[in-house]
Image 1: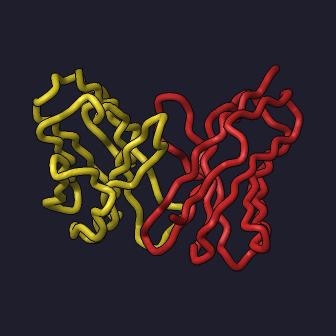
Image 2: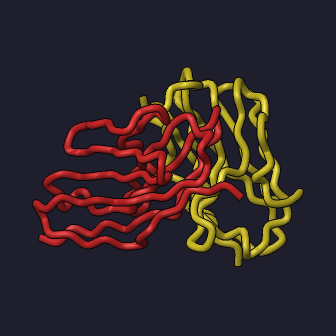
Length: 110
Length: 114
């Protein structure tokens, strides 16, 4: 069936480096693609979204890129900080239905 | 706003018992969602409501699971009878329909069925 999934389960970076978290999707009919951050013991927290007809969107220290040709989504975090350590999920929104990918554990080393 | 409020935070119950999880959405939000998170299956959508009406319950695993939303400020997810494989973290989320960034999750209920 259609699904959203992640390439890598873990990513370890040095503090201050840039992080790139990737996601592959298969449902081309989604309205939005969204990145969530989940810290231990908490629910997912919205980071940034991108409409399906866009290819790039920037936020504060984060950038989301959407490549519809290869059905690939990425989240770039600039100057990664220890507080960025968490599990990151990509998700797709179609109507009111939000479907999550598997998650990538980001670890930031001091 | 206090955000989405779930209770209890932790629940340990014996197999066969009834379990009720509770959720208070953000005031003014008109969509409510129940998710289940496990290591094996990740975050799964169980059911969602728009304006207190169940719209899609295709993710509810079995008849043992039921969800209600009697009013705009309260929802329950009930498991009867509970089984060890139901052990997971259950999240409630609410949103203002069509507001992508407004999708807000609660802190979850960690359910352990022994």
